[in-house]
Image (cartoon, rainbow, N blue to C red; front, side, top):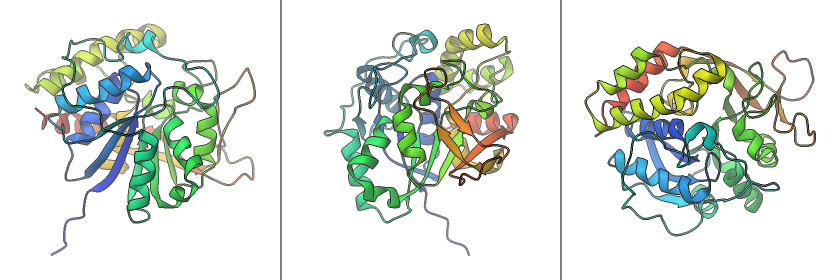
Length: 318
């Protein structure tokens, strides 16, 4: 008889955001597959004071107050913070009202937690899952270069190629907020799997998909439906689409069922100099350069399978 595989150890780095919240819930709903060692907050969708609070709200909603939550970088490496309240509302989790969290923040800085955890674990056993700007990850790599050899893989939501930009004409929000951090991560040599807008814009909520969450009969399902109701309005108006993309849960869905996604192992560079295209992920999708491949850049998703997985797992939560 084959022994069951141990769950994959992950650290989620995040700036919640309603879609971040859904990604975290999905991870916490799959303990047999994913061992969440900790969650680190970064400034992004909203400032750090709100993102670290939002992570704790989400953990409490999932009944997982055992997960340590660390506050990290409150600003990008070189530039002023750009936020996205126009999408996520002033709290980042606008929509349903949720009580302030009772669980405390863990002591210490997110970057130190990332360094200490990777240092203590055997090489190649921890996957980093960044859902926001890459400031915490880049800072950890700069501060302790030895840890890059310890990371199994980075599975991140960020960037775009065919879909180009959602915060500027050429840049996706997470990369645009801190392109210098993204450049450090993309040049780190760590195996990268990237969920760009090209994929996430194919994982659109529809009325039946949202109602499936609402009809689960648990609080987590209702929250997912209400969060989606809130931030759908922005994307429907902007793109004229039937629903909103669930960006960040694509990372966790990939860890649970990689066959849902298709992509190419290609070279991806980050533009940091140009005022016009700052934050652009320049993806050599057609392999027209001789630059070495450094990322598996996803291009397609089985949207029905993705929402089926999401609904089945969210059903397990309180």
